[in-house]
Image (cartoon, rainbow, N blue to C red; front, side, top):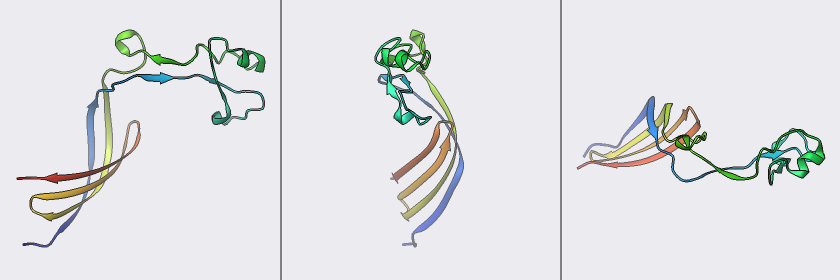
Amino acid sequence: MSSPSFGINYGLTAGIGFPFGPLHRTEIYPGPGSSGDQSTWSKCQSAADPGAAAAGVGPYCEEGPKNEPNWANGGSYPIVFPYLGVLFGLRFKPHRNFAAHLDLGFWTTGLFFGLGLDYGV
């Protein structure tokens, strides 16, 4: 039996994703005394939320919480999501039929992390 082998993986990745399930959207507005930090803002409860109007902050609230429609229904929620990315990883192959890998990378939507185990007959 040979000794375990280690490797470095790198390259480009591309794919197509198919989002499923609802995309829930909530609008927010800066409440009284809020700073630019959006984590301190208040959630809109309806169109022209009285709290936003009372704060005199302008038209932040177009509507309350809702499920965003997908492209087929006139919304901005994609049906098909293509992505591109850069991949870096480590591979450990202790046996000719088994390999494990740890991947890190950057896609068009942000960072990703992956862990995989492969077995071949």
